[in-house]
Length: 276
Image (cartoon, rainbow, N blue to C red; front, side, top):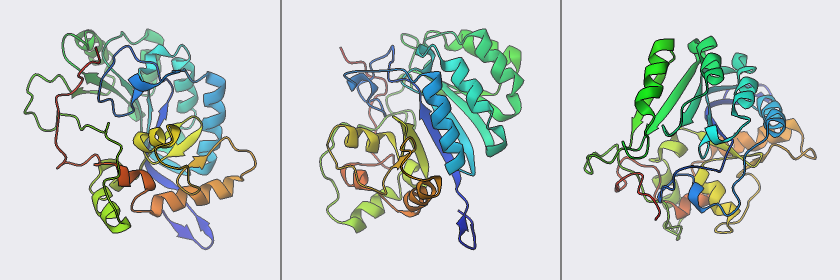
């Protein structure tokens, strides 16, 4: 964040827009708890257009803007939403990222869009193994042919001791840190918290998907200053910027007291275990 008199710039490292809480996998330890949504839904293009319009007034710049889910390809409006995101390339200093689980072919029209904007875009293929992510090879081949920037995140579970390929179990939401100092110390080792990542869910900016889920399910209270209500027209853009700056400056949030954190030293489990 850069200050100039009373005007503060909001320059963000990373924000993810969740456009679907549907998924064709049922990963028990999903980072965003997608299999546990009772009423999954897809974000409409019109909803996304409004959210993006306000977000890019609140945020001066974001280095990486990610479109994700759930499985975003299950949203019929995914292409139009991506086209809307690419309208803000002048405020996206790094890349537009698209995260998909390797179970579906990416439509040619979406590939065309990424090829047209290859200098500022990236597709992330999550590989959950040959039995789940069955389209990894075919999609990778198409991306190579088009010279589209991409990477494969390996979560296949073939090597259960593979430290960075393992997942962290976030399903225990009990209170773990009694004091704010303990909470802060643990949170500063969390990749999301230390890296100042944010997520947009239901038209609100939250510090992470775990915080949003805990608020949504009444595990923690919804506290002013710990989320930005983008779609609340009664709150000015400047006030929303102030709230985001407040979130940015905090070492931890209420949710962090209930979380082991996305830390390098947290115990790992076999990734992509499916709910029976």
